[in-house]
Length: 65
Picture 1 (tube, rainbow, N blue to C red):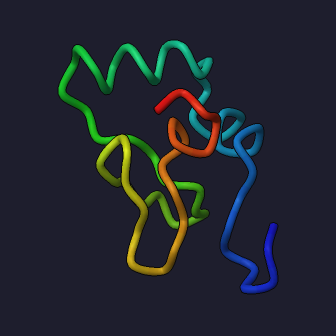
Picture 2: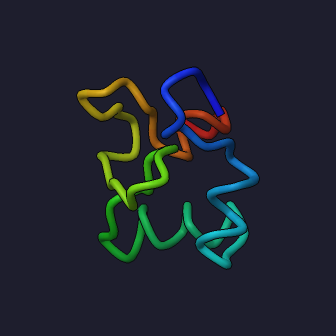
């Protein structure tokens, strides 16, 4: 978690979501879902994007995009 207390790690997001990173990637790329952002407020973002508060998508943070 960073200094603002709202950012999460890839592992924390995966634990919250209950899916593996590959499952999220497949759902985003083929299932037309938005990607979860590394944020504890259930933010979503474009797969290659970041939220206005600076948190990237899980796929971007994991180096998949």
